[in-house]
Image 1: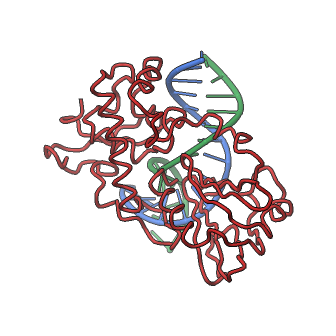
Image 2 (image 1 turned 180 degrees about the vertical axis):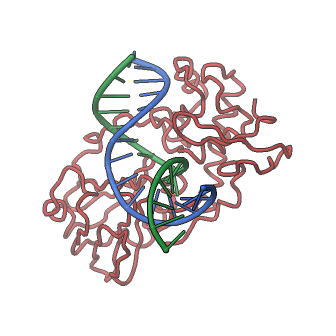
Amino acid sequence: MPELPEVETIVQDLKKKILGETFETVKILDARVIRGLSSRSFAQKIQTQRIHDIQRRGKAIIMTLAPSQKFFVVQVMMTGQLVVRSIPDSLPATKIIFRLFNQKYLHYNDQRLFGRLQVVDQLEELKYFRVLGPEPFSRAFNPEQIKSTIKKRKMPIKPLLMDHTFVAGVGNIYASEILFAAGIHPQRSADSLDDQEIIKLRDLTRMVLKKAIAGRGTSMRDYRDSNGEKGNFKEQIQVYGREDERCPRDQSLIQRIVLRGRSTFFCKACQQ
DNA sequence: AGGTCGACCTGGCAGC
DNA sequence: TGCTGCCAGGTCGACC
């Protein structure tokens, strides 16, 4: 999915467009995206409910419903999209169309069907929230906390950064970008980072994500915001997807390796 | 317990 | 043109 900056963009836009609105009907075109509920019971839990709040936690979009007080949780994973439209026409990837009482439509599109839409009484019912680590902009994501976790972890720093129990919201694109910004080699064992590097990692995690939010996220291929538009941050991506291009810092060639099955991009010369 | 791998799905694209 | 294989912003459960 979309990582933290993309989900944050979706949430901020949805707040402007549909906060306070009420679901009228739910048309399920492909029931495979509904988890743990039948189509009928999913629709029943959504219809007539008002969107009382919209927030992000990690890479999940959480809508608080009223009056039921239940949580409508959307995880768009790799290819899911929530797009607000004024007409109900659907794309091949459109799996659910929510009709709102204000004559607008919220489309859930998902090419690969990895996304999940769930309605729960408590967020803790979902394992994702039970194990989720600190938000990168929170005080809980501090050098002492990072240090105590990192000391127990021997894995390379890059997959650790992507581990949502370590820090919430960082995925494959931004893990490479953050490590490039911090000058840390993606294969460095996590427990080898010194105090200064830990602070740098924390600070640059925040800085890279903040800039990406300002750019409304990165669209490599499928990501679209709630207007159906691409994010603008791709032009500012330094290394991800840029194998054999020149490093913007020292002009040496950017390398691609595979760590834990995921493409990883870095500059051998300036990441130690 | 921490770490690694494959499964879940579909479509786009490069190479032959 | 049409096939084959590889690749893709995530998460989880099964295994060592």
